[in-house]
Image (spheres, rainbow, N blue to C red):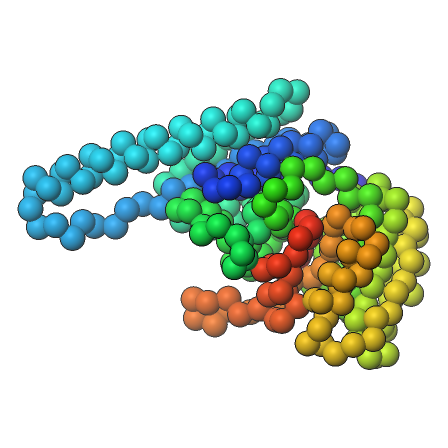
Length: 271
């Protein structure tokens, strides 16, 4: 089992080039096809009633759209480099909705992290939270400035939920290649239910995982997981994404929200 087709979200934000290089490295490791995906929102109707002014604005917007489309394509091709089976897909439309559609034919989707300390998202940016809810595929969230993922030391944040089970299955290609896998659960004793069985299940896939119980309240789950990951020098965290939709907003649980906003390492998440 591996990843045969990897998608990477490409935009003009800081960190996009690093993310493409990281995706290219994973494609080489797993001998996968790599597809770069970008979309630019379609401008809304002009507020100007004057037809001449409206025409000038539209022409300027079309030039800007062509320029940005060319720049983002060149960024992908330049940093994906040679030696890979690559494809490039660009369209006009909503970036998140477009990437979620493209994900139907992918095994893994890479997207940038965008927390409060990160740069303001640009027009082509895909936000990881909404993508997780819509893609139906595992999403690898990459913080700015990370261009390589060794995944030698992996922390799996375990709780006995459907999301966590799917995340563990989605991460198996990484887990099987890792030197150290830490199966970690946070909470009271009831939260640790099934952790040993999951470790035994992973051993059937040639994954040698150690189990770790961290006692604490649900309000500090993310802090405990991130602290453990730092202490063990982990470069990948695997966890389920917990959230639901309310009208047009995505409402996330505390741990999911904190990881999406602040995790300093790559996170493989599944909803």
